[in-house]
Length: 149
Image (tube, rainbow, N blue to C red; front, side):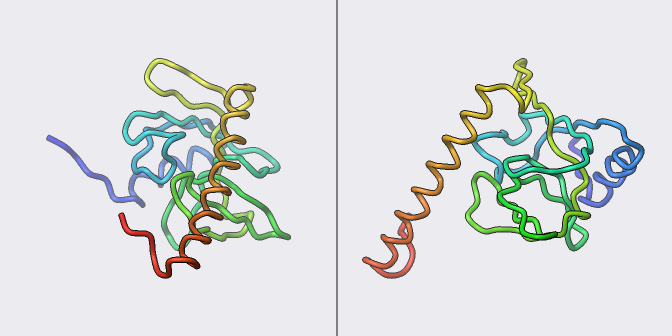
């Protein structure tokens, strides 16, 4: 039998462990971080650090909901996050960040976010996404409205 946990119930012990400087891991649910993380296939390992940087994938809490998205930029104390598969930002304060992903596991393959292969893949994907966003914007201006699917 499948048991479904409420977002708050699931993340409460994770948040408590992180506040005690422990490392935690869980399976990713959802597709907002696709293709980097796969729904119910990717296990992420998180811990806190003193300073979060653009391109870190962070767990943050906003309006009593938890998100695992990529930090795009920091402006003063405001952090702009976006899922790799999404186009809109979530904006929160630095103190709402709970931890960052320092490694992840897809199947049997464990990968550190400090590995050159991962960093190059992320940079390529973010550049590709910017080009895709520009092309979508041009398409909408030329043809009006939203792209048909």
